[in-house]
Image (tube, rainbow, N blue to C red; front, side, top):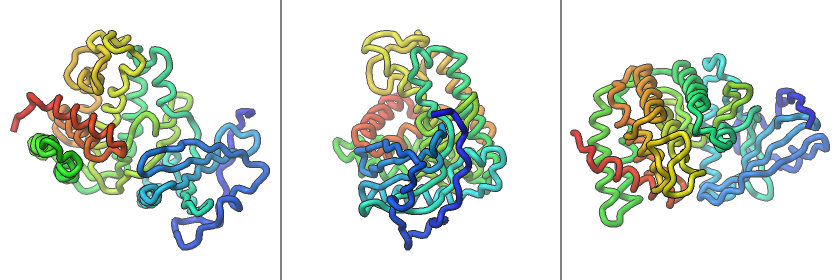
Length: 350
């Protein structure tokens, strides 16, 4: 690689999202000047393989092809295409270039694929896992600022009708169905309803929602967000608080990933590595610069949206419950359920 910047992708003959014509991926990418990198061999129910196409001597790819491995994967690709095509790109202003453009559909060996324009940058997750990155306040604050500024721009650009804050209506019925054993799902749903009643005292504008705004989906380069990818859970007219709390919770979740069980986590004197989700518990109820940062991030986001910033913890707890109800991996969902029940054990305010 020479570090040269790739030219914008040319128009493809499969522009649009019409599924009636699926040209073969072999033909689409049968170009000696393109280098291919396959990654993301997921074992999730909606598994997909991701293929990046690089022009010769370019640092960044120009195409991303997601190939579905399962029927659920096909549904996820259709949902992502619909979410991206529903966005009014012209209204996005300075962040338009950070949202992937749908170029069309393809197929390979009977597997359906979605083609989007690639975006430059490296995932924020890469820096997160560098030695002591999360121990350094200045670096963590910079991550939150980047994500917060991008999210504010998206929400401001797409704000529409106002409605009551809704973090629970699509989740409460899912919890008992997914976790019927010993009534854990019913108990979680009951607690979530109480949280929802507190949140519904405020309103927010309905905005475009990414749905999975975490470090792995945010690309950055030279101190700025250059792309936000994987819009499978996106909505054109959704609850913006979801993205706000999802970023903060996902950042907190892995704070102790590189610390041996029982040991204090570097940079966070109040956090000891132990049970799954202790980083989230620390963020929502601990003392220190990181809990203060999380609280301030969610509070300021709620205030910007016109909601009550005092309900920042309620919003975060609802985000944990959403993870329990909607996570692809059953084990991850179950851990979120246990965490939600633990965090709400003494949080029964009507």
